[in-house]
Length: 314
Ligand SMILES: Nc1ncnc2c1ncn2[C@@H]1O[C@H](COP(=O)(O)OP(=O)(O)O)[C@@H](O)[C@H]1O
Ligand SMILES: [Mg+2]
Figure 1 (cartoon, rainbow, N blue to C red):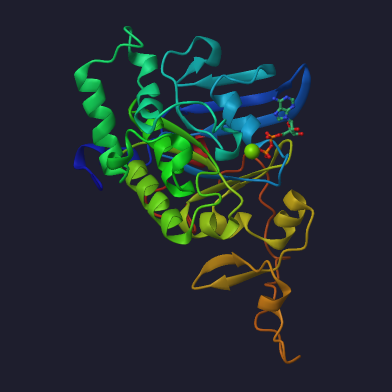
Figure 2: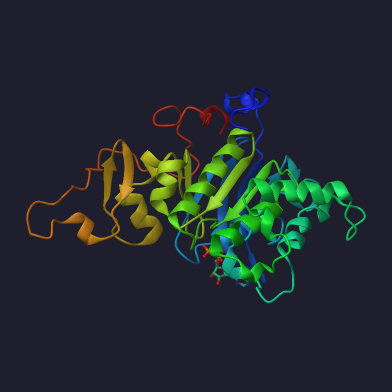
């Protein structure tokens, strides 16, 4: 499934590519009150974007706006080149686990099958091949043996896979994930990140919200930071800086370079030698760098090879 040749073209720069998601000056929110304002964002086919921001910054709202579940109050939102209200191809969506009602009486199999309801004219009667498709996906995610269990009777990592399977059975071109690695162990987080990379290499465009700055800095080619609006957008080496993290989180976060990758030291103990000696690392001098402003998709430098942002398309 890695790098199927017929999909390789998705990972080359295509000056004629149209954005798969485009927000122009969008305000969106609830009951007429905007949570997001002046959002300009372009997601290109094949992108893999990490969405960072503090709690309440609007990450979930942005994903649900793209999904068509939160009203656009002003501005323009197009998905698959179609205004969102009228679009026919929905995105796959993996909700934040904490928003799920775990008392709802539903089995793993039933949750995964829900992913087919959009394309099934005969809902709630599923064809045999649809059930096979669901089990096929569950097998691939290592939850095939759990089909008849209630979703409450699973570990966090298994629950995460159930909702991933539900999103994937519709073969979406666009996958929106809300904190897919929150509260799971390191091994599961690694598995999920590898699975998402495989999907991305197979041509799926992915937007993932997360609190794990270091995970996205290491794994993802592009990071978008929000706090009610877009604060920064670019590759990790440009976005993960004390200056920008201060703007996004309102907190001092030292950044060190580790094998060429930026890493955030979130604890002072990591930072200063306990014996009171020299600091283990120093904050890189960021003053010579340009702050990464919204909508300046940088090209070339530091962008992993399969990423293909083309500034000329902006
Ligand atoms: N259904 C809703 N109705 C009204 N306000 C909401 C709703 N969902 C979220 N909010 C508000 O929108 C803001 C952003 O929330 P959210 O998008 O969930 O942020 P994040 O996912 O970054 O934590 C918060 O102030 C939150 O209280
Ligand atoms: Mg959220």
